[in-house]
Length: 123
Image (cartoon, rainbow, N blue to C red; front, side, top):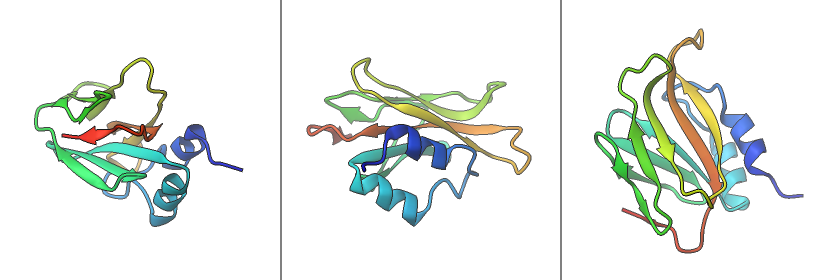
């Protein structure tokens, strides 16, 4: 039985900044062609699972081509501390939240999981 986007997102949702994922979750994602995307610091988009890489995105902007995924810098918004992502309408994704504090009062970023498209290219 294959693992779904929702299942991976549930494993990631509620984790802490600096401890966003585990080796086991990344392997499960990789084995199911799923990409995990989350923000780090004020300038990085981190990819795990079917892709293991990072892309600079200081201030936000386009981080992949064909399909185009954009990193959106939230700044110090009331809901999110830093990152969210904008996906093309035809690229199914499931969101999860990474927190910055133990009591889960501040969401550090909104991450996403998606199936790796054949033609995905990091910028």
